[in-house]
Length: 63
Image (cartoon, rainbow, N blue to C red; front, side, top):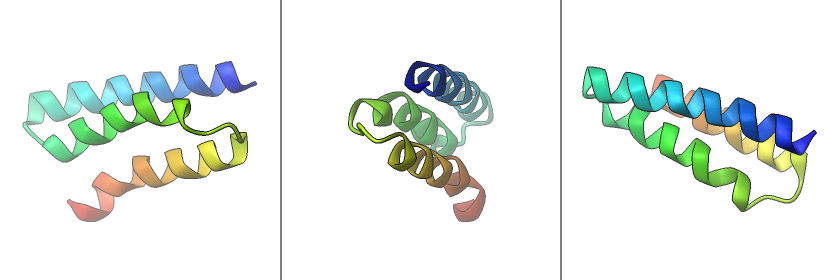
């Protein structure tokens, strides 16, 4: 289950990085990079999902 979540977060992170680079919006770029890094720091799936949701929503609220 955790591997599946890592793959999904990696795909979303890749999309954010590509979008941020093309639009020169570094908040999306940074969020995408964080989605790559965050799964290494959480052992609990619940905290991982909650943190990922916050990181995904961050550029939409701060933009």
